[in-house]
Image (cartoon, rainbow, N blue to C red; front, side):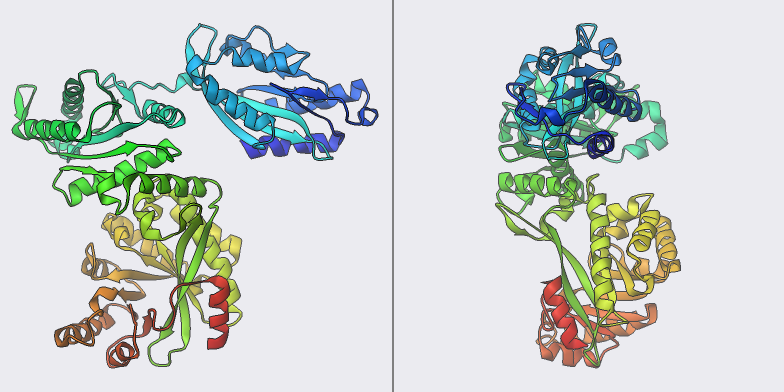
Length: 595
């Protein structure tokens, strides 16, 4: 909405008039030093102002809007605003009075953040901005309101208008109807407030394992009572020392400003032992298992969505690797927990901001026999202060299920195809390999998005190979088979990446046809020193030659490894022996030498 507001306003403004004026102050002082002779007549100027206002009202979809003219000082809001907020009038001849009237509605606890956001917008810190605060409505209640603002500039580059729409979130309940606790909207709102005010706390995620089995056996009403019982067990443990939130399904979040990590761990252990022994529901003593994660809010964390993604990452590990025990994100992040969480927050923010700071590196894939270049694998990186270059293993496992990740997945495909088109000019048979994530393939719009990017870039499908990474193989087999079939029907090749690691590589080969299998480097690390390893690789490559047209071995680091693999059923090789992953400009030089 923000870029569109600015675009629409500038379009209307530039069609009708392009005259520079500007204003600032607490809420600005009108700058009358501009060439006022250049401003249109009062009638023309009023027509411009109301023309922009009417256009904004049409596209706002019924939302409250207001428009400020910095040159004349006028403030005009839609009459709809009088029906929703406790504003006394919608027209002010001095816009500062209008903005101060809005500010008077803001909850005292939100004033500092509100003023900071408005100041950033009015004084040029941002061309477009969202400001969220609790504001008093006509009933005297505080409701959450988001102001979406955009500056409209004159032809001389000066700020001429401020256009804003306002979203009243009263219709979005922050209370979960099943449990009576705050829901995930309330969770994100409260976490964002804590982050803005630099309030430290521990955040705990806990949930019931295999709830669907209880629903199937006893019905959804029983499952709901199970959820309610567990929620109240958490509340009883807190004794007012924190807030319980009901998130998705049988998952609850708890925010605790004062409890130590040791107290939380002891509490979770007691709760886990209690529910494993059984909880009485409808006359039945029902045992169930839990999974749980925890992290500490600190400075440098920018948004609640990053916090939740980190919690979910550790939450998944609780079930997969730690038998339902409480897993601290700081323990599994592989570095200082606060630093890791701040880094994830920074990376996520970069994704939202049009994938700022991301770039691709390319590692060559060569023909095993001729060692001629046949393709490359595109590998994502992020670069930003104060972290320097951040490798994919530091953020993809955490952010893969985040809603923002789809945007990054699209960016990777688009960038790889655009770079691939340049390489095809040198190597007409070049194949670009791009890794797919679990969340991309889980998205119901994935196939349509893929077709759209192919059309947008005009990249030939036969020169693209999509690699199924380890977590992709977690998808339900019928869904995965359908996707692979549709992808190959487009003329795109499909490869199984990291074969032999993780989940069900053999079952995938049995269930669906693929064009290439890439053997993980772990199978060839000791190839030259270990006779049993050599025998295994011989037999493995012979077997895989039956399952797919091509076999690629990753992790080639020496001429001896390449020489040994010449005697195996292998079609291509990839590894540092040929080149580490390098940025496109350097890879293009490498490709030119290999032509």
